[in-house]
Image 1 (cartoon, rainbow over the protein chains, first blue to last red):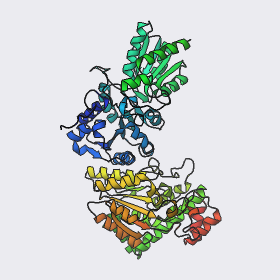
Image 2: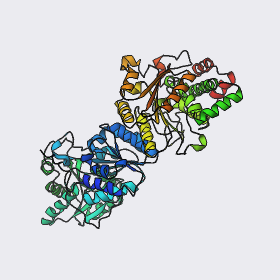
Image 3: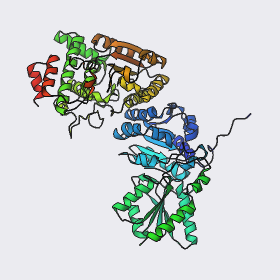
Image 4: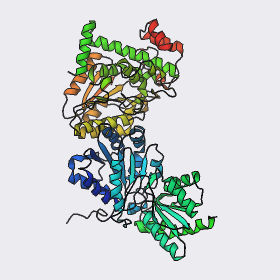
Length: 319
Length: 299
């Protein structure tokens, strides 16, 4: 019998883009070391294990030790990147808090398998709380890129950035949103489609769906602006305020609990700048379940038609 | 023999004292300063700070290659106090060896002080990492040891764990990883005073057979009297000579050591508030002179 194919490890998943980017950047960042907890095939870091075996450090299935040890490795001058699934980052969040953020270490956490995008592994594995949890830690930067191209750019950006970062990738093959000319800057949102009736602010897998929702709305004569908010913390407050001022209504969309993630960050920015009606698209404070990501997007109401429905709802509240 | 040991030997010879006697005097001063700081703070954990004073005296006084003027030297040895609640003893040791000011360190746990209830790396240069959540200091230390090895740096890393701390699962993750990566530049000290926050280890969660556990995890194990300076120094020498595996020194200690009313009484694990009278009595029990007590208490 031939070896089984590794599901999802090929194609344009964000995790593969991240893994390839790390491998490509290893020579440029000589202090880079990648920490793995026995899921290199799943997080994309199997690429660097092969290309730069001396930079790959195995920690076994022990995320708490791996997370805090990254603080020690940073303390002696290395540039550690902790890799595991998003849900297991939650298991080690107190280590990230004390030994990375409180100690102000230049260490990165890159989590694959966030949200409903995890798919068939089901509710236990679908991490819908990470953006909220990591956003609450002082000094932590939180990033969720939208496609493979942006993931590769963001990987370089976090290695160049001095300080702890939590970045989500993604398990499933994802549609391309950006061309070769795309650029990425930590802390900056980007208008992908202009419009004057309302603004849809999205991150991660929801960016492509937000663009699809804008098409649905356009067919009804509704002119929706779409913003890619790849950095959840620090949120691009100026852009949020500008969109509120110029379009008067906001919808957020994320593959995450509606509480505390992108929606929360945007709502806080709105409240502090230009208050405007806002609707939140995300998983409605419940756990996920098994299914294919696209099926789940409909079952849990984060697919494009639900973003469009939220847009119509927020327009009714617009003054 | 390590450089600081040579210095201590020279100094000891100059004063006509043995190294052990000199370290005993250091440990006594660490205990006095610790209790005074906890008195001034109005809260703190005296028991587990007193039990590890001799180990700290040997580490900073004889074992580690680390100096106040070279605290950023990449080649320095590193110490992590994983049992972060013993911070007052670490600060007292730091003051004794010139890493911080002895008087400043009496502002323990106060608003605006760099001497927080648990050590913080951003506050004090000689604190190698922030601790206070049990288990994490060990992981950070093993990360340092691993990182130093990857960079072919010969510095050694030491971390002190409490016995109750060994109940954290992370400790055994770190123990397994340290042995797997053959971190012979890592030496763990266990302040085995047999008591934890609420009661004896035995009644909260049994630790024994402790030495056998570490051996089974692939460690070189030494078991010593943690108040016997010669035994501590000898265990350090053995650890430094060990290759291919990390070392653990299980130091049998007495909680509250040096102050008879505190010895082996879990209530002094604290956080406790010490009265001036209690502190004076404790300092007297430690052999502090009237002038020494006055200097520590009237600040």
